Image 1 (cartoon, rainbow, N blue to C red):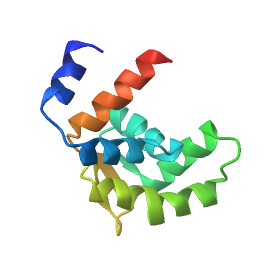
Image 2: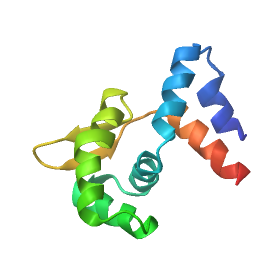
Image 3: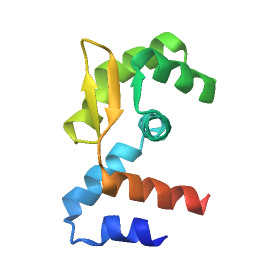
Image 4: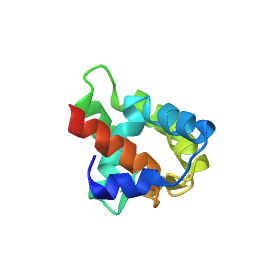
Length: 110
């Protein structure tokens, strides 16, 4: 874990906060959303669905888009990880330090 990641997770957190972070990162679509939003400022739902379909052979564009709109983006938005405009079908990454730190640490282990 690098110094930046350590700083992001070093404040005292409750078990519930860690459970929420791990739950959010448990699904590969949500990890893909965070990955993609780290490299792009704002992304459309269609762009995210295309990237998920590219990464996951089993995900069709249609099913990825539906899952994003009705499950993954609302959950990430409720947790404060992303800002999601349902009407415009656009989202952007918020400053979700704990989520990003856990994901970065996990990537280092792979």
